[in-house]
Length: 386
Length: 172
Image 1 (cartoon, rainbow over the protein chains, first blue to last red):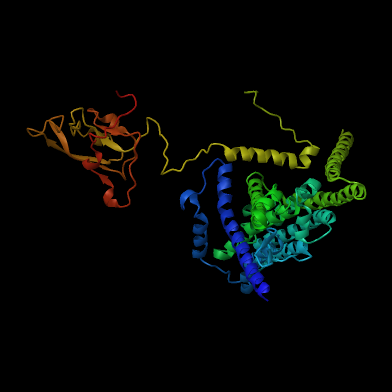
Image 2: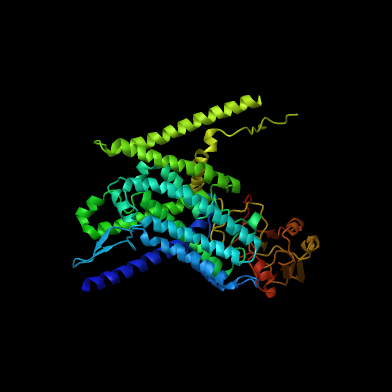
């Protein structure tokens, strides 16, 4: 009984901390987005609120709250209010299965898993919740009673559904390697530097491209579009309801960064883990692991912003073409390639480096063959036109 | 007709394989933005940091004194005549005995006012002045005013302080 209550309290504190970290990171993402944008455009960026402008998120939040909370008269009021809440809720729920660290020793034989819930469907949970996130956008766009909002929402929905397929297929290769859906065991397989990125270079590229599309970030930010849609699915939104939409986007970015770190970059693994374990004990090592995971996730958030300020957006048919005719066949090839590398190494003395080598050689081979094929096609076309 | 050798013929053929898989170009572009990320910024944190505006910038007016500290202005009114915005007004007065240290000429301006809302900082007053008395400083701007009562700058704000003399580039 005693143990259960300690564990319960510890878990509650852990959940609170994860919640706070997620919100804090999301709030400061808005600030760093502007700073990074400014730096990449050779500007200084926001620096008025507080030293270096670090109070900017607070100022933005105050601004958001102070603005008029407008609800269009012909809109479906209840859904109009529910939609941004749904967006926020789903964004926050995803972090439950991300293992932020190993175990903490609380004394008295109580160990706290640094993970919200270790469910055996782990990564499927993430996918399920992310798919639910589309509802927030779709309901918001529909409830606004505005054709532009609806068009934006439809774009978001079809884009998310298209890219979920390729994303799911790229995950299958990971599942083949780890043999489990649980995020915890996916991370445990990768301990001591056996990061999945070494075995899954192609899978990672597919996953990160799909993550960009799922988060509605540039170059796939078609749901929001001033030139064609006036604003996008949130055209009619104002005040903190709009804030919720924007905020949930940043939360999604952080969480997808954390998921990418979990799936491909060893989660809370970091070089020198064993050494820290010997020298400073389990708790310090585990907390450093939490730092490592958050660092990796933040790096991905930076990559998200870096890409945003580098690339223009795709055209909508290009986006669909890339998803359906590019990424889905590629991810299927990735599954086959992973199977092949596993077959070569599974029942021999099959060293890990052999697997790594094979997976990279496979990708290179695929590139060469495709390049060669497209070259011949190109020549054929030229002959035909000449 | 070819005016320069800078013309480039744009070929819009079919994309090559490397172009069609996007990634090489994307990585290249990200390299470019990263280079800019670490490069020197072209903007500054303005009110704290200020740029040198050049030797010919026309800013806050100043009524010069000579080396002994006597006001150079003789209230001839040429600046007021030259002023296209009619921003300058003055009242002339006769120098009394014992005021030689204060005023260089026998006639001086007891009141000299510039309406800063009217002034267009064209610098014609500076050109018109025969006594080299009025200048527009190149390194000082007129401070922001928030009330109409602060708009008219009198002699208290315009006459040069002897402990903070104005020097322009090229003057000895």
